[in-house]
Image (tube, helix red, strand yellow):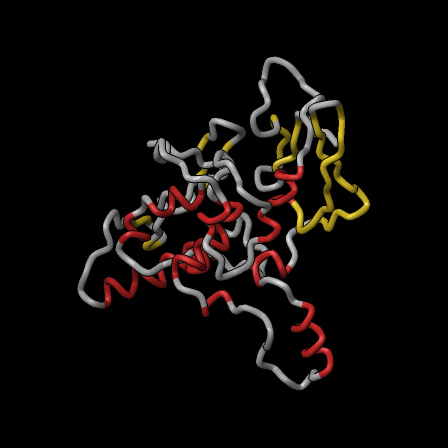
Length: 241
């Protein structure tokens, strides 16, 4: 399987170069590896096959692909949960599944960071094996060069969020602003209301949110979720809030 050099960006309703592709030459030979599917699908079977006397090649079983991101990618194995809830339809308290809010703040962040903290680290094992409650750093080899001083808005959402005053001066997690069970792309009113939930509380206590801004229509925390040009692709929402 190969990646096309052109991608449709639904949030911006436009075509642009796929991440990492040059604007000067169209390439059609970039192979889609199993590592790509670990964040862009829910499952795919793979095996290493002998391709030469001293070499092996990754073989992906295209018939095994589970497209999209399913419940288990965030909540862990769910067979027992589904079986129990099916057999007990009147039981409204979920059992045998990991509620994200039951995890510590760092473990909650790790769930999202599995696919939203870049792909420039060397993995020790497949992220398909990651389950909520695991420590994400255990899935990568140690990195001794340190984090880049200017993380890119494409794929480095966690690093940018962690650089924000909102994150550093609160207990917020990704779920503070994002409801992963609903489609919120492009709905700025939803994100403004999330900002107001925290900033209004600060004002009620007599404080003043840093970088507070106003518009004629009323208080609007317009610095949140602004688009920024990525080094790898087109404009992407910036999580440096």
